[in-house]
Image 1 (cartoon, helix red, strand yellow):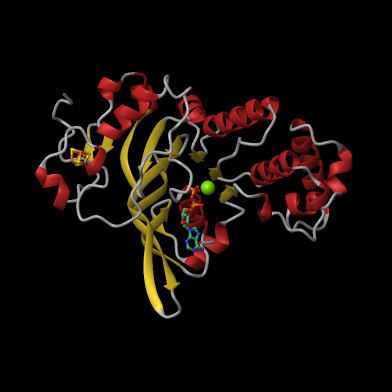
Image 2: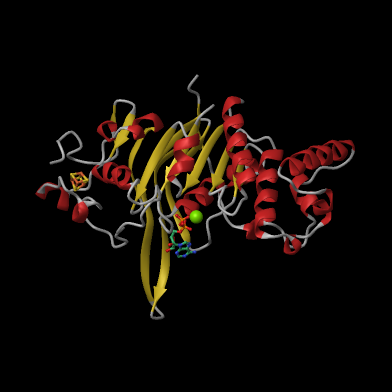
Length: 313
Ligand SMILES: Nc1ncnc2c1ncn2[C@@H]1O[C@H](COP(=O)(O)OP(=O)(O)O)[C@@H](O)[C@H]1O
Ligand code: SF4
Ligand SMILES: [Mg+2]
């Protein structure tokens, strides 16, 4: 079954900034981003910190900051999501596991925010489910009546995660769901994401941790300097010969040397006319400097490189 849940089409996100009082400056953080998530699929988007991953999550949920602009289409079940539609389905069909614990409402007890606005007979059942999932993550009964400021960072993350899973969404956007969790909770989270997939749900997993991506994802989208430069099946990451982009290849080859962690890399923020990887690329040609490659299909993968089929010397 390959029914499409989420489809992000040519999305760019920029900010208008005011420099020295009156001069407006456009800061483009994400450029021409396309990816999709099907039912029963986990797609990881892997990029270093500050590369715009959380912004993508916020654009999907319709919670970009006021000074941000999003161009392109974000579709859910083949329907373009307007701001109104995003507001109608978020927290229900599409849930965010946010990266920041500031998403918790400071004035509300955590059990109340976890169950949401449920009244009457359904409230008891919702509280029962909330207790069940909280205890799975090691949150004792006393936690239910705490306010966010009374939680440790790790507890707050578990509350956010439980809250998202409680609403039984079709699509989960998990923005760095594991950092800050203890080892047992990391395993629980990974299991939960795998279970969501088994249940036919879709997960967009946003991470800078390649190990988490390799362990859970079916496909991995590599983010570089605001662009998705390659989307490939996770199994192909075991063999650099099956990868397409010179950046992805060098990233994977460098992993053992870097203790299996992503390096921050040099990611230009200034807009360049051609390929963003030009300065670092071992297989560049003059053409690449002035001509930006598009993300094109190559078998099951997607690649943004003019020379991906040429051999790296
Ligand atoms: N409200 C904002 N105004 C201007 N720039 C912003 C704003 N929010 C985020 N950014 C810019 O977007 C970049 C990406 O942010 P973010 O999506 O949080 O990165 P990531 O999640 O990949 O670490 C930041 O480095 C920052 O430069
Ligand atoms: S487009 Fe050119 S510069 Fe960019 S990654 Fe491909 S070969 Fe290298
Ligand atoms: Mg982030």
